[in-house]
Image (cartoon, rainbow, N blue to C red; front, side, top):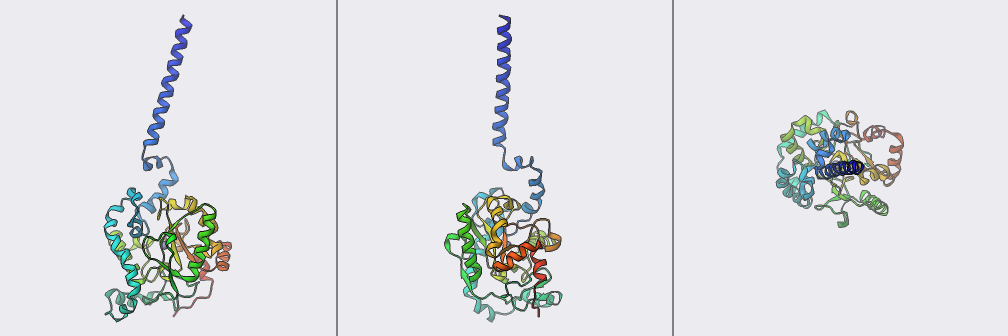
Length: 309
Ligand SMILES: [Zn+2]
């Protein structure tokens, strides 16, 4: 009798413990992603750069309902559509732009050309575009072609045809490996970059803004050979590098001529925070040599012949 009672007590205790575990487990499932991430130290360390300084939340916020977590999403949603829609127009009206009176910004840039090396012709695939070297405000790449709709651009986008041809090959190879993506940003004109940078400066101040956003003339996107990959829930965030897509790109993009411009922990060399989504086409053999060199892209390009004015 006493034995049985003791046995009942033990069973009861076990059931209580089991219930406690189940309760804890369900609580855990309910916790929001951010709270859970506090248990992942690396995620927290990375969060500083990405949450506070997303590269291009203009495109980022454009139509991503899933990014409710992004503290910037609400404010930028209002600004985005106009900016994005402006870009195609800009392309059509490019000729008219030249007839317009000089904008103040162009005067400013002309003055500061003294501080930078000016790239003679950005059409050169290995042109060095950094914080010390600049494309001209009127530089527009030759041979821009529209991205196909299957790449899911959120608005009309362009790349130079050779870069696009290789991006299509990259797309097909990724798809074979079960990796799908969308393109979040491609060619950006000087004027678009100028507007983006100006907006960030007003939010963060010039020095902070320039850690994740290029000054006009200094964006690789103006070359028409650069893309921002996306289609994950962490687009434009450091965590993108840990997604299957981010990993696949890091391992394979160079086989299709694309180099990752801003690797992790190299801000002191590249001038920009880690951007695992940002890739620039430099040609297949060059990209393979770059990969083998172990150098950052800007270090590699510094070793190639450059033409400055
Ligand atoms: Zn980019």
